[in-house]
Length: 405
Image (cartoon, rainbow, N blue to C red; front, side, top):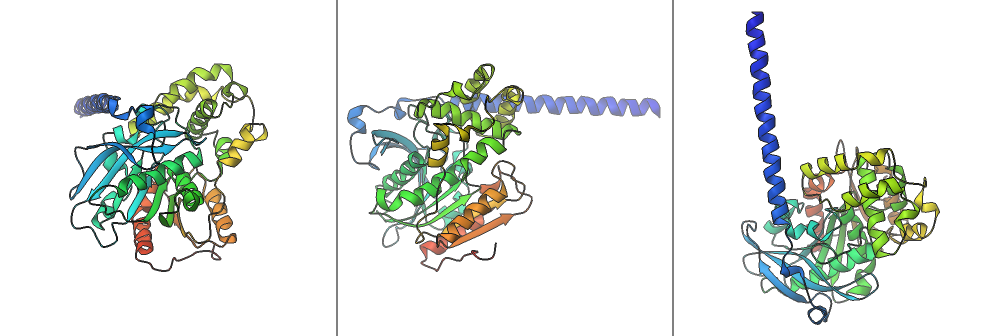
């Protein structure tokens, strides 16, 4: 019996080894395919002459392979504006359902994506699984809505990417809606909502802040945000004990050094700079990417910041405040989703932001999701978010949890 047991154990180990080897090979294939898919092409390059023009107008478009059933998808390059107002090109994806266009044009949902990286090759429009990454896309298309999914500036197009720079993200979001309106099967409708997760939640909220002044010809009917980045000072300090928090901080300081000229070496230890630079070059598309980044960032657990709280010194103090969204105009209803086990954007932070919105007179719906962490907040709240946005397009009165939290 003992000899038989040993054979079973050896056999189990052999099978485990074969399974592990197969998984490793699969990971390597996926990584190679991801690298191939993210190869830069001339599509994303635009001359000054091409960039000149009204924000939201198309520079070029091309059909995308593998569009969802019953829809057509296009990779687009459109005109927008940089944080300091200069004309720039921004890339993204437009997805349009087939079938007749409703009277008044299709409703448009602007998808604001979560963190995918901070260098050009990390653009979602270059990703293999772009259509699966848009939370709720199937439900949105089944309802006949067009989807405008920006890459944000500096992703796809030449960098640097203004990571967690709210006004930059919001302009790209709104201009993607303008670009979507030019497609024949969209019908030039003027009604839209914005829906985002994590970094995209911050982008969605900033879209609500600037929508009326930046694009008065459009009607923003609602803002939906899952686990949004609403308190950047807290994100950069409270989360430093986690791999995800150190990753977020590393990407922010690397980006803001280049976007704002905020000197990285004032708050980053010299020994940590090579690790921060390596993280800046890694993209996030799948769980494999997250695992790789976790390995890359391990040295930061021992040697990272030279100051306990960057929010206490300039220019970081002002930059963190300027990129933390304030209350939205009360006329724009808000949907917030938050996982109870989120260790990156903590539940209390989202609840505190909801109270700020409520005190300013907004109608706010908050969905608290038990046992949901940060990575799945967008996916797990998508059904509720889509139903909430459908009610806004239908003209129904927005519900509110204000006064009950």
